[in-house]
Amino acid sequence: MLPRSREAFAEAQRYMPGGVSSAARAFGPVGGDPPILAVGEGARVRDIDGNDYVDLVMSWGPLIRGHAVKDVVRAIAETAAKGTSFGATTEHETRLARVVVDRVPSVELVRFTNSGTEATMAAIRVARGVTGREKIVKFAGCWHGHADPFLIAAGSSALSLGRPDSPGVPAEVAKLTLVAPYNDAAAVEALLKAHEVAAVIVEPVAGNMGCVPPAPGFLEGLRDTCSRFGACLILDEVITGFRVARGGAQELYRVMPDLTTMGKTIGGGLPVGAFGGKRKFMEHVAPLGMRVSQGGTLSGNPLAMAAGLATIGPLDEKAYEALEEKGRYLAEGLKHASLTVQRVGSMMTVFFTDRPVRNLADAEKCDTKRFARWHRAMLRRGVYLPPSQFEAFFVSLAHERADLDKVIAAHRESLAEIG
Ligand code: KE4
Image 1: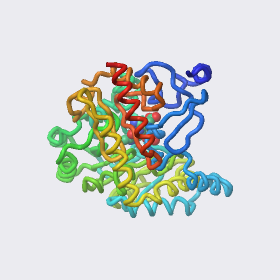
Image 2: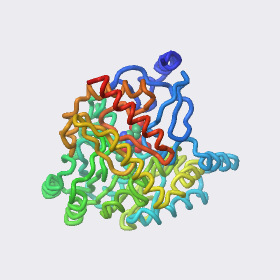
Image 3: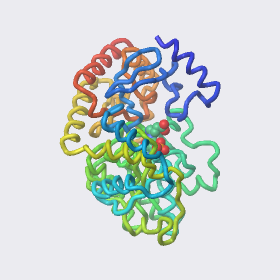
Image 4: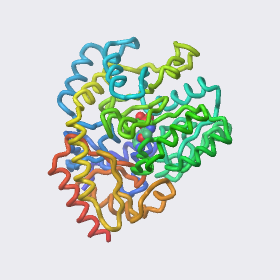
């Protein structure tokens, strides 16, 4: 029962469009009112009606160690007690920058921002500034945040709410964004033959049409094509960074981009983003070189840096083995003849189709109405999932076997209920 949530959501809708601070949180695609959450602890969240859920959204990826992890909370509190923001370099950002440079194989210099959107926006600008070219290539169904150049054939909330090409993006901007099907390196080769392209930006594991792994050779093909045509390869690792491996997807698949964008996990639940890469590009970010403009009042703020460091600092190989085992166990338990479960490490999606999903066209064949019935049935059984077929969900180090077994049992009951 959600009486207080329903009342609180009505109040939220009085002041905020759709009662949400981000379109992805809208329950339109699945129906019903969203629980209003109040407390997070480990793998669990509780709403204001006192209902307890196993959380598989985990704030859309940042909480790789779980909610309210004691040493992360302590790091934030201790840092805040000495000042929340200076608008000047602090050792907090240098410490986190060192971890990023040490762990992400292709990154030699990194700049922090306040969101993944800012990071991808800046990365595209650097690629355009350094190459002197204007066009970019993205993939249908991928989401890179809500900056204009990316809201063409976009995934995540744009896809879930049926507006992959957002109103408000000027035609002049949209025509500079070329779109290829995910997992189709040949289509990118054809585009780079026909156009002067500044950058190809790709989610190395797509999360925003649901979890779609790269086909064998896809990322390698993009790397080779970009090198041959002088385009900048940008891996958008806002989801996959520090999630699918200690050095992100570029370490897992051994494909080295020119630029990498990051977010989510490196802020441990506080607002963060980052872009980084080879000196050839990063040495033109203002105030250096060509001085490609970028700025941000709270970029690199001490609280997000401290939270990020406390979150990813302890992630050693054992932690990634544990995340892999938890992900494998859950995916195994969710399998069903009428479904396709796709997973990379601790990120996954249950697609309501019995066919593999390799790109957006495949994802759009899913039975989204049956997904919606399943989502509501799972919520009633205490499992909190992203309210869209076109999203990935996440397990954290805090998800114990008992939490995963609860999800698997709820899944089996829900499938029996919805048919
Ligand atoms: P933010 O601006 O939301 O920090 O990051 C944008 C972004 C960039 N790149 C990728 C691959 C992303 O997945 C995201 C954001 N992801 C969505 C979920 N699919 C965040 C949820 C939301 O928009 O509220």
